[in-house]
Length: 295
Image (cartoon, rainbow, N blue to C red):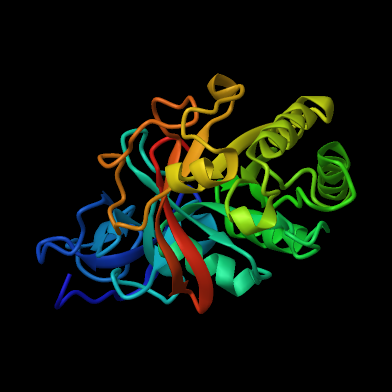
């Protein structure tokens, strides 16, 4: 709309518009006559179309935009901006991050602008304690509009507390502090053989009790791991327990957001999500980057 200017603002059925020249091609939306001063060529333009690097949209008041508003793409006052819908279509791949530090509201808004649609903050530490940053992060993500807000649990198999006790601590904390904002899933972080017993049979038994605790406390669980970590901890890639009821989030740092590299392990023939880049900085935070068409 280079070269277009507006002479006044106007309103049609509560929708703010601008008075522009129709013959100059300044309106690709809806035009309404008799609402603007000047010649008959000057009409009220509402729902004008606009285009941004983040997608096409409609010029409207920022207060009425259910997506994201971008300034500088619409003729009109400063509150008339290009509204681009942010809801992904079912065929769109989704991208997410997992984090181990507290997420601020500004950080969450930055992630939304970057196209992040799911976030997985740490909820339980390898030391055997709840990570009390988890609900701060989940609430910030919810306020910013991040669609899926799970958590991951780094369990402590060598701690004196049982797997069930550790799960109980985490679920109780989440239900008490951010139940309505939490999406309801706990990802069991199965990695780091140094955190586990040297006995693979003991590890298998402890893992089974951890998985069983998901049902005990009424929580949806999933598993984060890789074939290498799985084999190191459990002695073989073929060890499996309730894989059909646990979605898999696997790690392979090839910077390729797709499942083209996936090889079956642990009873899983297909994955739910992939961590494709680790320890990178995004929105001034240390994150791991993830891909999933299913979140």
